[in-house]
Image (cartoon, rainbow, N blue to C red; front, side):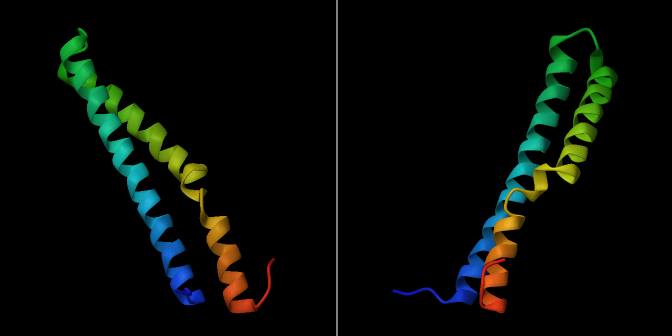
Length: 89
């Protein structure tokens, strides 16, 4: 069964959005784990755990904004150019 170019673009876009969502879920889980470990396994206490978790989340959000969110955008742009423009860029 052949796949149309619009279906391929929709698939690439869906994959990209899924990967971005998965990265944010991983960041959120890591933040919660850091907070709980800091809270219960160190003398930092609750507020120390919240502070350290906030730092982890800020660094991870910065990384997502700078370079982690762009893992497949280039592939989507190339596919879109081929579908819409008729040739590779």
